[in-house]
Amino acid sequence: MHNASLFGTIILLLTGLMTYKGFQDRRFFENKAFVVDPILINGEYKRLLTSGFLHVNWIHFAFNMIALLSFSSDLEVVYGLGKFSILYFASMIGGNLLALFIHRNHGDYSAVGASGAISGVILSFIVLFPSRSIGFILIPIDIKSWIFGLLFVAISIFGIKSQRDHIGHEAHLGGGIVGVLLTPLLAPSYLSIQWWLFAAILIPSLLFLLLVARNPAVMMIRDYWGENLRDVRSAITRSRSPHNPEQELDQLLDKIRRNGFDSLNKNERDRLEELSK
Image (cartoon, rainbow, N blue to C red):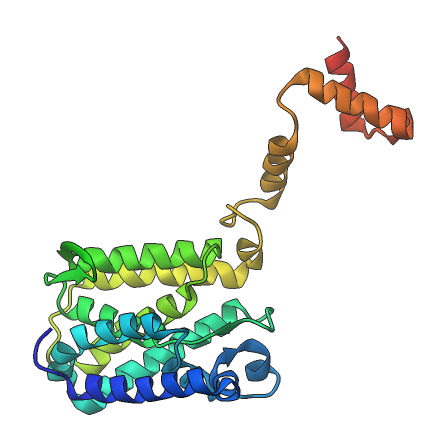
């Protein structure tokens, strides 16, 4: 961490105050948090911004603010206070908009945190300084920032797809995309951009979002990435079918005993004939 960033310090103080207020006043927290139905039904789009000043707990707050202060000094030198503010808040809103799109049919989905904004800050730093090293809190290793950027995209995409944890991967990816897109616009004279890195971050991210937009089943079926649904159904059926022929024959005979021979469909009758030989 270099000299303290003015913008980072201001955000730290404001976010800390609102986070504390949210802990003390549950109604305040609920009125400011990101929740799908109030946004889409009641038009409370201010939540896209206010939710970024709240956190689940102080550990959540600390990780986000440490990350912000770690990168903000360099970026404030590049952008200046005004443009850095644009980057931060645009990334916050962009991250929440992607979360809103992904969870548009989950009316009770809620989230808080500055993760979208922080992701935009980090990805902007990576595009500007791809050869710098990035360290990890509590883990004594450093990696090149461009490697971190590629890992960030991969983890975010698979995190959105799996939906197996309680991490806001949608906000991370959305904020990161906005941060990358804004970087050449906000600092055109400073930027000596590595376009391969720019493409390596954006292309898989945008292709994944296009896939989700065109084929919502991708988010509904485990391990489905857009291939022919008929093949997926066949694979699921095969995976559920017993591998032991004797067990399969017993299942067919049990069905006949319960419901009669006419209850078998053509495939089951053909299979019964094969197993009976």
